[in-house]
Image (cartoon, rainbow, N blue to C red; front, top):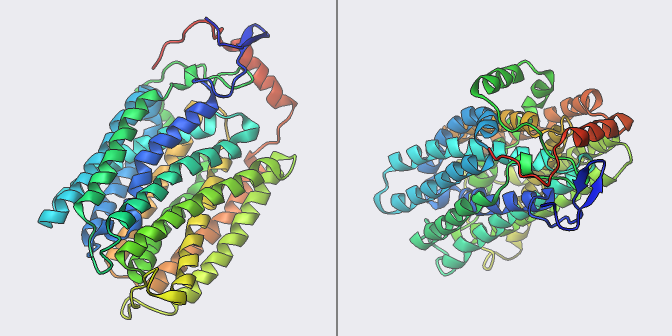
Length: 466
């Protein structure tokens, strides 16, 4: 049976509806919903600072364990995805988020951090698999000239999870303005959403069954092997394209520790931190939509669009870090500020709130820009799953270091300057990568698409699933 409303073109059926189940739009939206429920809620939990606890030590140590295993399995995740396919990979990955939230529910009563640390390490394995899978879907399923748009679609749905997740502690702790740690219902609410995301992951199709609007498949490879993936992943460490991405990857989660623990947790009381997170993750939606437009529509030339996107992010990022420096000079680790409340602090709340909102804006713009660059390096799911896995692995190694930097009481100002420097170094290297590796859409690209169509079997016959 062919697709409803499909037309014959060059021996293959060309689907017409963007909203068909096996379309890139629907599949990217579905992975967005999965991430809405799982890492979106995790982000809201982390964004409160200290995992919602008064003492961030347990959360910092759990996060270090998390990002250490994440660094390893982020790199391996692309290969595992190519072997297992998206459903089994995502199902196993998403279940680890439920365990992590549950460990803080346990910590609320027993104050033993061992469970949280072990759960963090297990979550690192799951997160590595999930983000390698997500990255492959988000960068390989869309058409080449609309990857920025699809990245912004995913990022908006995903970060709505952070918005809703921020509302959970805000509402449940609204009348506890002097409270230090969140209540049990907050953690239970996170676990309910994460469980829903785990079940929703079963709706994701393998790339061999996803068909773009022009009739091409995301891949014609039905399976991979362990030996193939080991060799291909090892090659990444000598791939000059990946080496140029390392500073951007390292810095792109490094700043979370500073923003969550040393701005949101230090400057605001519990209920206000929840409200701040609503706007932090809401800003991510705006940032991803804005930079997605620049990366897809600002110029005819894809390479020029890449340069434009990097320039915009570098200018906005520099301005935001300057604002962060001005704010940081007003307090230090040894001279903590009076906790701000969104109702009681009046105009004193406005400046730090705008800064924290801007940090969310920068995060989404920076990461969406990097994902676009990665997506422009290839079109097939197998290659991009490895590229994204490498990116997430390096990113997580940086995050693991950042959490320990904070645990060892490094000054707030030093952390800010380090974050600012790392992001700044990455911009010229990304410019070089776009200059040397990103090609404009051309006749050669059209010929490649034609070959894919000719090589692909008719979509009227069901393909075997991984």
